[in-house]
Amino acid sequence: MTFGTSSLDFSILPFTEGVNPPVTKPNPAFLTDITEQGMRNLLDRFYMGLYESPIKEIFPQDKEAMKIAGQHSADFFIQICGGPAYFNQNRGAPQMRGRHAPFRITPNARLHWLVTFEEALQPIIKNKLSSEENIQSFWNYLNVFSQWMVNSKD
Image (tube, rainbow, N blue to C red; front, side, top):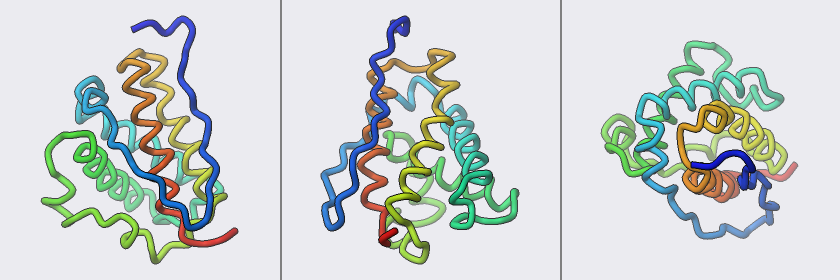
């Protein structure tokens, strides 16, 4: 892994209402590199960032409930990255659009969500826990997946 000159691209794809681009799952090597515990740590950082973010009202207001939500999300991301089907075993089929339907997710909320995820990824980048290719693959998945979750105009 060479990180001297990063080629990571954290640009955010523009949201276009009514357009749901095809989603490509992340490279399974991302999970292999960071491990299941690393994914749980990533999602804990991410959810604690959301807890302090401008979109915190969408999420549980209790810190412990937020941590539990983060671990459910970690189960999803472990599964989507080719790991064990924890999410299916514990929560049923993901059906993420349906699960997010009760919450007002605007294009602006999507931007905050992605920025918070990028911040949560920084220790993985800094500590070179995965290759740039695998990190980029994970980001690309998030970038498109987040478009599918938008369900409300600004």
